[in-house]
Amino acid sequence: MNEIPNLLVGIAMGLNLLALASGRLPSLIRVAAVQGVVLGLIPLVMERVDWPVVLVAVLSTALKGVVIPGLLRRAMRVANIDRDLAPLIGFIPSLLLGAAGAIAAVALARLVPLLPEHRGLLLVPGSLASILTGFVLLTCRSKAISQVCGYLILDNGIYLFGLLLIHAVPFMVEAGILLDLTVAVFVIGIIVDRIQRAFDSLDTRKLTALRE
Amino acid sequence: MILVLDIVLRLAGWLVLAPILPGIINKVKAWVAGRKGPPVLQLYYDLARLWRKGVVLSDLVSPGFIAGPAIAWVAVVCASLFLPLGPAGSILSFNGDVILFVYLLALARFCTAWAAMETGSSFEGMGAARDVGYAVLSEAALITAVLALSVQSGSIALTAMLAPTAVAGTALLAGGLFTVLLAENGRVPFDDPNTHLELTMIHEAMALDHSGPPLAVILHGASIKLAIFAVFLVEAVLPIGRLPSAASSSALLAGVFAVTVGVGLVESFLARFAFKRVPLLLTTAFLLCLFALLVAWNGGAA
Image (cartoon, rainbow over all chains, first blue to last red; front, side, top):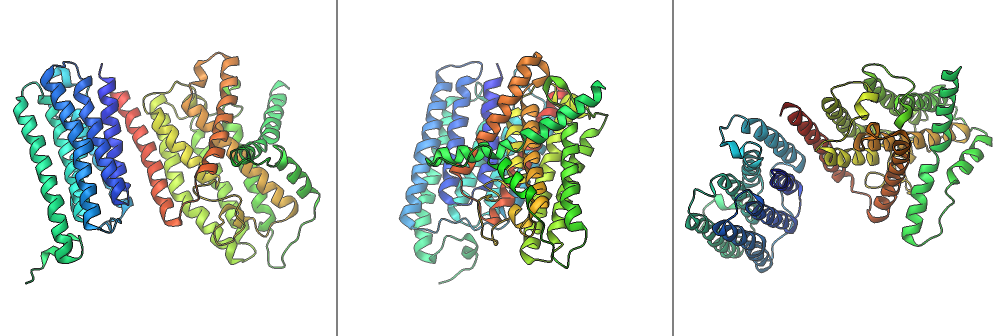
């Protein structure tokens, strides 16, 4: 019964590493989108499926797989930015960091007390690994849009953790989180354009110095 | 008497059958490109031709120039004797032989690199440096794969490690070992066997100054090494030991053939990677093997 969700979480953990290793912005956006779709399918293959669950799954798949990547690609096109990622730490160190994070997540997840029906699932390690990957992307990539992708992967991790509570949390909360995320990415899409015009670059390191 | 016959038959099998694999790879590449391609037995003709030729020796070289390829060839052939062949098992086997197996392959690489540097040619030094540099990463992946196999079977003898059925991490292990196979044998994403530009060659650069029988020995040893890795990959992934003997030998043969065709297809559809992208790919192979190890470890605990 747990095999299909575990397989999907395993694919999502593989996508985390792919996100850490990808050197171009479009491929990073694609990885984040595919991960959103894969994680969106998980509620449909879990044990109890009722209509709020289906609604959450459909909404999050549509938003994370189509709407948000579309917004990011549009921002990338409009701002006409350089597609190389210019990482602060190299791809191999970040890949090793991500792998160490995944191993630590698996080890840590054994210590978390869970309900009996969640024992065999990989939800907690998958969620911790995604959150760590999100942090690495947020701190170690210098371009604004790649940081947004890190934010999306971080959110995927939180969503994965939230699946443990999917029957306890009202539908409105899940929908509210998804809406917030979409609005945030929408706003960032506009801000990116502004930053590009004001600073001629999306390197966030340049935003630390004030100027008139 | 039977034992001697068995050893001789096996040796003959490895020595005679191995050079067919590069032939199959070239045939697949030619077929994808729509060419007729060289005959499958081309390497046999090349070896026979090289064997009849004389040797050109530089004044500078020490006996290591000849000894290197010879030792490497012997080491690779010894390593092949440790691999179990489906239902026939292996001829040499003891507890912990897998470590000797890995070290024999490393010894072969050391001797090839040593012989390459004998003439003092800068191109050969460059090729040797690259080969050994890639080996640092690919050996880490190979050893991790060996660890994963030994954790999942609870044994450190090759015969027992490669016999049991596959577990959940098999796909990861297959991906990792296939990448190691490509890197160790100088196949396309890492090195282009067809290139003749000294600046970009790796494995061929190491054999630039060899001629005649020593070159034949290097080429033959390389084909045996390819066969060893193909057999190792197939036996690590397929549950060879669990099948009846006829089925397991045909599965082994079919698997090795599939791996060879796979290498040919990879070479047809991929270009060689830039040198700075290679460590990333090898690190990925290492991580695949590491996760296979993790899965085997986790599966054992649960």
